[in-house]
Image (tube, rainbow, N blue to C red; front, side, top):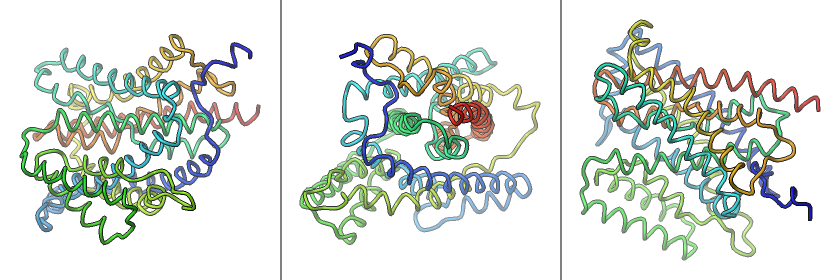
Length: 399
């Protein structure tokens, strides 16, 4: 066998049957990204035109939580549930099921999380009184899967399928890393009694999956109970979504047309992309703009923008190059490193999870500064990626 052909592919082609799955996902995420962007724009305008009524809406109590907390703890749990389903699918039947292949997007994702955090820390260590801002180090580390896939779908009709597959894998692994960061670094205190109840509920959920139970009257109460007790334990409630997604059965039984994970993702993805994420955007993206002069001097906003626009793409490219240089992996024949750079820049679209980490990092005016940085950085990364990938799309389309 030719030595070059025996090497692993850095950007994998879609597995048989995955093409239609990813295509469907791209379409739903494209719509969801547009709706979420519109919701963020409404929130931003509303907060600056009538900040008092916007604040009143966010703080409106609905049952045990305010709308702001329902959005961050409840709606995003649905978003992370879909992420958990996607991650388990990639681990069992997708490109992550082969450790040698999985190492490449994992290395790129790890570098793509670490470098923007280092950029943020560097900016705030240099800035006056910046050391007090270091708690926000993870804000620029996340990639928003909905917006990244939306941009790729709009500008990349002729781009090779390995690029789409790699972006999906990278974003899912990225989400998992940031979820772990949230669980470890943004949990102030633990109530072990509530945590134990949550673990017990998750165990019952897993047992029901093994028993092949299919009734929503069983799973919905279990999901709600697991989410609530995890919330009460002090662990961020979105983690419940990931846990439930990872516990859901992905492999279909003999004679079963679709697995529970596939059925649930088909049903829940539209709710996540068109309802949950836009609701969170509406409740979170409404920040008061203090003027460009303030933002140009603020180390939090500068650190977030630099992390997303510079640190994130550089980390992904360095991670991918390292894997290609020091492992048997290589680029797919259809791709060039300029394609990789376009995808890496697209990874700087942080939005949803970055806004969540901003909420968890600060409780004072720096929260709005961080969110402005997220919005500006994500917009810049999205526009730059659209320019690069649009050009690559024309190149691949004419080939």
